[in-house]
Image (cartoon, rainbow, N blue to C red; front, side):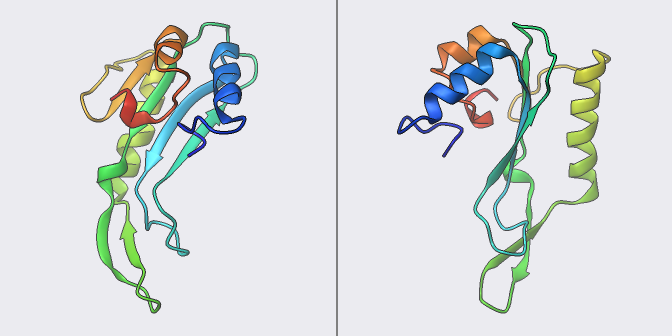
Amino acid sequence: AVLHSTLGREKALREAWAASGLIEAVIALPGGIYPDDRPPSSLIVLRKGRAEGAATLFINALGEGEFTGRDSRGNMVRSLHRAVIERITDTYGRWLAGNGYRDQTHWCRSASPADIAAAYGNLAPWNYV
């Protein structure tokens, strides 16, 4: 909930990160891809030295996990195919290089700090794509 919670200090932290330019990317992953049956999770990529006002890349891969069965405890097990992992890394690489990147409906969007501020500091990728 750290990406979108309005309780506690999370909102203020997100807004400070977004304003500072530290957040380079946020990548949402489906639940069940880790052995401990975690719910959906997100990777927040921070990079020092980014220019103030730099955009943030949002990738929403929540719907990309494939159900592969249940573990011995009955928890759902999912996997990400190599093609999905390559799509994530290709999208990120193109965005970083400024070479052939384009926003894609339901997949990715490059958002400005003003876009993030307009969303009250919400960093959930599904909010942007």
